[in-house]
Length: 100
Image (cartoon, helix red, strand yellow):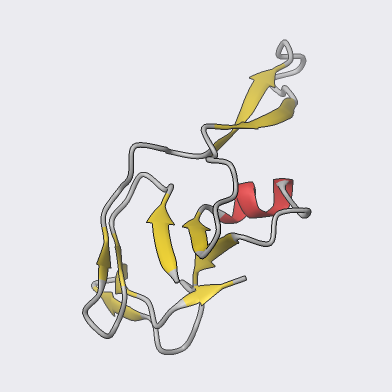
């Protein structure tokens, strides 16, 4: 299985594998309403810059993108909340794997 990192951060696994940022940074588009009483609403749109599915390829994306594409079975997110996630001074250093 090939993994393509579509997040803006290098993803490191606990076993030493590293997934650098690819040419695609998948995001959910957004726009904002006018402020009324110091509050506005965000309106989410389409997912942008997500490659089309390819055989034997999984795309590493944000949880936001994963949730916006429930029909896609080729998307994973880093397991940042897993107990085996390695942190240094509160920052994630590496994760044990991915969540589908």
